[in-house]
Length: 326
Image (cartoon, rainbow, N blue to C red):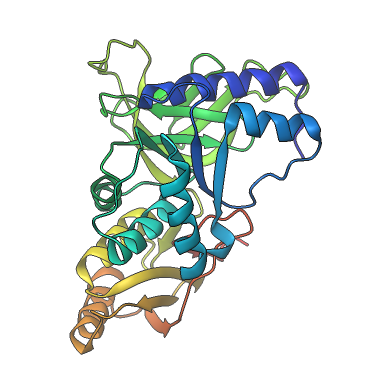
């Protein structure tokens, strides 16, 4: 459990709203969110805040059926928000739906904020093409809120030095060099209700010392490589990033709508696949060959075909789930 005082809560909200402006959105303009568990109006104050300040419509990612997405698509056309935000994969999933349903659709968006999950280049390409605007990646966590966010130059994500000290440490606890993958450690300068000091949040990332051409002087996070737990470990102790696995399998196997890899034992994986109309016998062959090449002959890969891969309670998707440490 985490506690925070009222000043901290307001500060975090102010920082997020300020950086929303990097997309071109202005305070008071309408927004839309593809998000899990949309916050209900608890009282008249929260109702008025949403009606006057946030002015937000939601697509609940815990119920992204075709009917839900079609209804949200129609509301987007009518409501005309200038900013949309959401989980990276959920935005991509909705963009794919719009692309199939109405490829000529026009939206009034100035920008899209992608957060909560790693945004892949191929997802960025689809989302920007469908909604005809730039996407701005954002990185954060529940404990300290916003950690870094992308600006209009799109060279990386600026660290939130208004609120945090962010360190990048190697496995031996020493500071990592620029360009080196490392554990992310945060200190929250604003939460006096429950101090969070040098907290290892469980993510791994890469930073850069190069200054952004936008002129802001803060250090950039250039890549978030995943959660510590989101790695596959082969029987010969080779560690494979879940992010690289997802990108490789999604791009190389034709007809994959969704996928998820679960590791139960050092020599056994379950690969869950949701197929689209382009999946065929050749896709299955490529999948088997890719498993053999990636994991080796000693790894047993059980392929399971499903109609849908459900989200977690937060509304996020997990591409790789390791049970080895549980």
